[in-house]
Length: 316
Length: 256
Image (cartoon, rainbow over all chains, first blue to last red; front, top):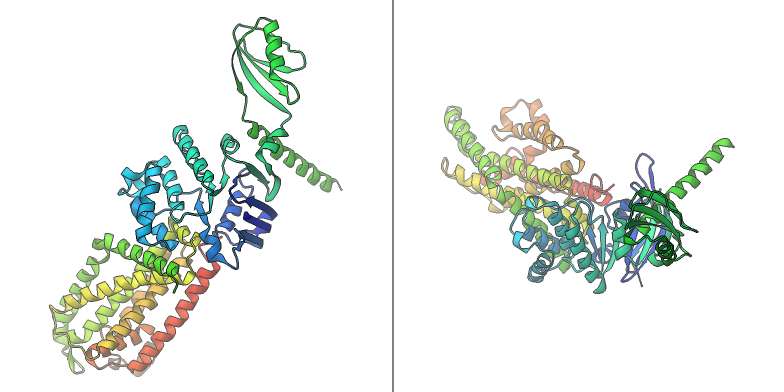
C-alpha cells in the first residue's frame, strides 16, 4: 500500500507564481523518504498541500488510500506534521501543548497523559514540561515539534527541515529516534538541507526543482549514478608535485592532495601507487557528501538545460 | 457529534478559557472597574438629577444596558485577539492540520468568547447590586438574549480576525464601529426621548434590539417588542455564523 499518492499536483499562487507543475509522487508504506530540492523548488508547497495548510490548484492527494479531498478526517488522522517554523503557542507550557494536540485529534485525556509523558521523556523534555515553550532553546523547540506531532500516533510523519539550526549531538539523537520510529512502521517523509542526513536516513528519494520532480528513485540507485568521487588524503611526507596514473590529482598543501576516483576504479590502486612512491596515507575523507555532489550536479544540469532551452526559444 | 469532534471542541474551548483566565487581570478586572465608574458617575451622581426613566429610576434603567455593553465588548475582543494571535503565531496551523471540522473550530473559539462574556456579565451584575436592587421580569429572556448577543459578537470578532493583517486591524472595528453603535444603542437613554426621525434612525442600529431585549428581561418594559429583538438576533446570528463558516472553509487569511 502507498502511504502517499500524489497525481498531477499543481499549485499556482495568487500573483501567478507556479510553485508546482503537475507533480506525481508515490511513497510506500514504511518508507523513509527524502524530498529534496533547492530553496523555492516547491518542497514546502507540496508538504503544505499534503497537510492541508495550502490549497491546491489541481491534482489529487491520497493518504493511505484516503482521498484528502473526499475523506479529509481519515486522511488527516494519518499525518503527523513537523513544520519548518515553530508554530506552537509560545506562552503555553509544554505539557499543555502536548495535551491540546492530542485533543485536536480526538485522543481523550486519559490516553493523552501517558503518551505525552512517553514522548517528552524520549525526547529529553520531561524536566521542562511545566515551562512555557518560549523558554526552550532552539534544539528543544525542534524536539518539542516532533513530540507534539506524535501525540496521535500518526502512520506517516512529515518532517520539514527538522534539524535546522540544531547542534550535531542533538541532531544525531534525533536521527536515531527517527530511525527507531521508522523501524516501528511509521512512514517518514523528510525534507532537509543537510544532505548527509538524507543519505544516512532515507531509503528512497525525490528531487524537486522549479515545481517539477527531476528525480525519483531509491537512494542506492541514485548514489550508484555518481561516476566520480573526490577524496582528500593526508600524507605522511611533504610533496611538491604528484602524479598518479589514471587519476586526476590536485595539491591542496604539501601534506594534502585531492584525488578524483572514477566509479570503475578501486581506491586500492591509489594506495598502491602512493606506496610505490614511498608515501603513506595518514587519513582519508570524502571531499563532499556523495548525495550533495549528485544533487548539485543534477540541479545545475537541470538549470543549464532549461536555460539553453530558453536561449534557443529566444533565438527562434 | 462523534467522539473526535467532541474531544476537539472541548479542547479548543478549554484552551480558550485558560487563555483569558491566565491573564485575568487584563481580561476580567478592567470591565468590573469601568462598569463601577459608570454606575457611580452616570447612575448615582448624574442619574439622581435625571430622575425617573419611565417607571424606573435611572440607575435601574441603565443596569441591563451596561451589562450588555460589557458582554458585547468582551465577547468580540476575546475572539478577535485570540484568533488573530493564533494566526500571527501560526498555531492556528495545529487546527488546520488536525482532522477537526471547521464548525468545531468556529464553535471552540466562539465558545471561549461566550464564556468570557458570561463571566463578565456575572461580575458586572454583581457590581451593579451594590448600587441598585435588581429585579428580574423574565429570566429566560435574559439568558437567551445574553447568549445570542455573546455568540453574535464573538462570531463578529472571529470574522474580524480572519480578515486582519495586523494587530491594528483588530482594534479598528471596536473603536470605529462597535463603540459608537453601543453608545447610540439605547444603553443610557430611552428611544422615546429622541425626536421621531432619530428614533427611526436608531432602529437601524442592531445593538438597540439587543439592549432592549435584555432590558425587557429585567424590567418587563422596552422600546422595542422583545419578539422582534429575539427574531433579529437569531437572524443576525445565522448570517454571521454562515459568513464565518464560509471564510474558514475557503481558508481566507489562514491558508495560502
